[in-house]
Length: 458
Ligand code: 5AD
Ligand code: SF4
Image 1 (cartoon, rainbow, N blue to C red):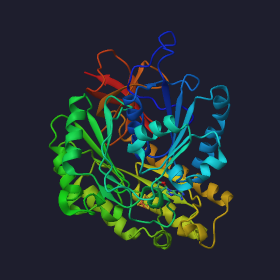
Image 2: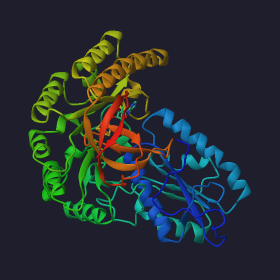
Image 3: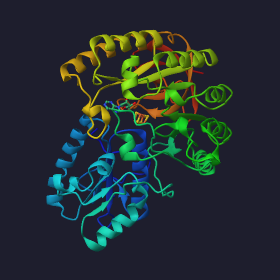
């Protein structure tokens, strides 16, 4: 991702740019939680007088919000940080800030690797940006703000949002699972749930501000409330969110298959607004590998979970994450994952090459899989999944689906884009009667692997 984040704020044209105003821009890598952190960082910058710009050259504050879940992300980010060096030479007053998971993991090592960085902001320090900037401006010395542990709950801060229709709302931070491949628990800390009434209030206000859809965010949303018994559990939260009259749709991510229970399924079934899309990362279709990953479930458990969901909500869509080439994955064990994919028939799978993360147990496991083998497996997996996704999507041809109109597609502004409750992306030629944020009925004419295309019907 080498494009700056886009925020739902007015962007000044070149003629309107004021040399007295300080501009900022942000680049975000990684998951939705990171993207939402950028919204909170950007909101704080705006609160102290910075205005947003898309242009690196105009910015006097550049923030890179980083991800370290895979090595490929880290490489890309180092490339981006390197690119900023020349800007710093031509504008010595430029402030360069690195936030997010790499900042949390590497701390002051980042200053050594890239001496042009001014601020390093850990995942637990996002809410402190105003103080951090002040400290920098007063001392003119670089600032390292990385707490090893989070405060139980960070205070709310001003936020600017990326979209107009769809907003992210964190419900909990951190993860206690320690899957053996994953760096997240080390850089995001232990699970902390946000108070129920804060979440509901934020969602209510977002609805008043015109948002139609919210996505509840957490590394493992199903553990909501486990750290404190004050707010009930995830199903109780879903029930409460379903009652918020100002919004229309509720999504959530990510669910751990082990923790999604009958109460959650039942709540979704009986809700008005909770979307019928289940994203349940299975990671592997081999019991041997699942055990080594410390996922806490077997393929039989997952099968049974899918059976329950499909029995309760037959039209629900189901997506997953899969890692190929985990240490010890033989051709036979990989074959089990391929067979599992064919058996479950996910609507879509997000597939990743296993990436060694130092400090995690899997990094030192025997039988690491060579990159060429991982790549071959990834291709096989994607070929199987793409056929399945296309077959599933073809069933929508000639049917009518309802979407919330999200706006023009990035490639062609005469094409509009919307999503179904099952999270299918739908494109159609703009007729002019559609309004962003409204529901539209689209008759599907063409099904593709990742998208549906159709025509607006009255
Ligand atoms: N290597 C590859 N993929 C990983 N993921 C997490 N850690 C790693 C890793 N070390 C994937 C998992 C997770 C998704 C967000 O990223 O599939 O669900
Ligand atoms: Fe990582 Fe596992 Fe936690 Fe997900 S559940 S964030 S994969 S440790």
